[in-house]
Length: 124
Image (cartoon, rainbow, N blue to C red; front, side):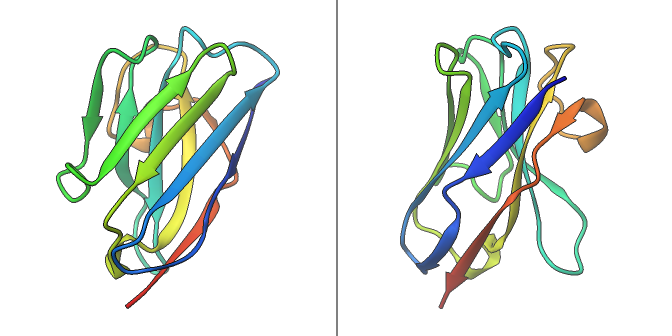
């Protein structure tokens, strides 16, 4: 059984930075694609970023491109999301997800395992 646990969320001023982490346990996810999604109150969950098993390929939602960076450390079974120049509209619960099929999907249904999420709040 795979368990994903996010950390690193918090309150930050607009323009600030945060780094989210997602630690996996239960098995190695070094062959899985992984992604970050977010959900704001009253809104649907939306894709933020994805990364392939090696970290050699990444994809981003247009809304975060150039500001967020997804990365992974397979030796530590950990996924990261570095967020810069945060905006109030970035505020949401951020969740990490893992996909056994290695597909860097943008739909939440593409992913098999999910963390509980970490809250990011951005003050204006």
